[in-house]
Amino acid sequence: MQIGFVGASDIGEALLPLLPPDTSMVMLTVEDATARAAAGTLQLLIVAPDCPSWRSMAERLQPLQAIAEANPFPVFALVPRADPQALVQAFDMHCADCAWLPVDPMEVRARLAALVRRRRVALTRAAEVRKAWRVATRDAVTGLFNRHHLERVLPQAIHTAHRENRILSVLMTDIDGLKRFNDLRGHLAGDVALRRVAEAIEDNLRPADTVARYGGDEMAVIMPDADRAVAAAIAARLVAVVASLGLGCYGPEAERAPLTLSVGMATLRGPGCNADSLLARADQALYEAKRQGRNRANAAA
Image 1 (cartoon, rainbow, N blue to C red):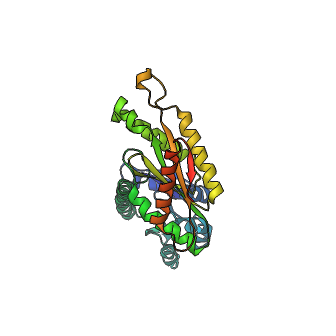
Image 2 (image 1 turned 90 degrees about the vertical axis):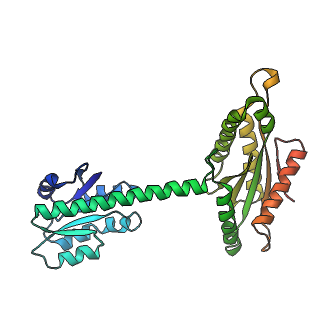
Image 3 (image 1 turned 60 degrees about the vertical axis):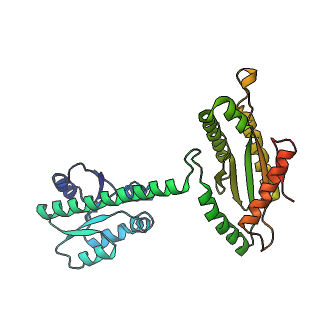
């Protein structure tokens, strides 16, 4: 773990022999520390005054404190024993721990070791939570969000659209020819092709859009603030992009199984429209796209 230090260089040098094992320290300016905090790369910070009073130091640290509220990290403050208010001010700044200056090596070594242990536990737990969240919300084959996540966020998106009088559209997509592709080339190759299509869809959506694997080779896209025209333009682009991949178009004639995309789209209408009815309309439009010859997009009535 790399520990950041902001303060007087002589204090920083004195701390180096007191660092816990498997840690290092880098000297930072307040601006450097603020940038690292904003980027989420500051794991632990030590601050010590390099100006006449702790109050002056605290004022300089205010931009860093504001960022720490959004990207929390522990701060270890070294405060002058001669300044009775310094300790109170440090804890008012939500410092995780404090020690007096001049440095007591035994005290600082023990407090730093405890802070590093707690920080490592917190980082490990955060990583485990992120992993569990990914397992719970992501599809294992495509890496897209799964149906469970879609069924949780779509009603929320519809509620927001109704409340704020905004537009919302949904796309339902289906890969044409995947069953024949799997029969000819095997399910492992089919999974690779499914991932390629999923990546192509995800790469050609807007940042605000959410795509999820709905089931089998079907994927659903939630498109906030997208009217019928915007949804149609993006749906047409997805059809063209997937066709341009040329999946299943090569090899011996008997093994060719071209993969294309059919898309159905539906736009939110009226306060009575909910997630089930919106998806049903998009699914019906998808069925019509397939009935009309596949490799195309179709809008719900």
